[in-house]
Image (cartoon, rainbow, N blue to C red):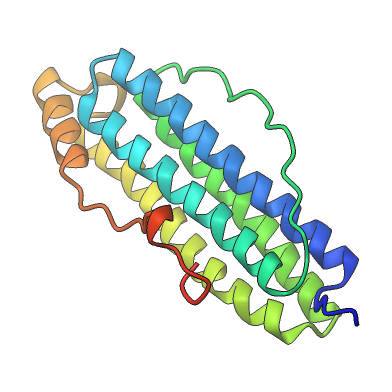
Length: 183
């Protein structure tokens, strides 16, 4: 008996998004390394934690595909993008990555709607809400840097921003805590 509850099209699309989330994790890891290399320990820590959160998103996709009788496909990741030129460039790139990811999530929602796969449509609503939070977080980073003085910020302002972001609470779920009920 075939127990697969996903179309091949949705299975492939969800697998692709799982890999997009892994690439996002990869990107934030690279940006965190850049920040650390430039002396921004707090911003680096913030980006490393965000890398972990993106990995958790990939795990959610993986678990969902498995729970629906499909088999996720892990593909090779592209190289992380080059280093940002400065903090403004870094935060702008973070925002751009999130906007692009939102568009990909919306296409998945549309696909699930078109196929009348209400379980998948419902599953994706968590990601729609999450992307609102992700874009807001990225916009807040840009705003905080502007308030600090942008590219012309004083060392004291950058120190304070770095410290603040390093102390930002970590809301990401850890992979080791994931279950089939709470991927």
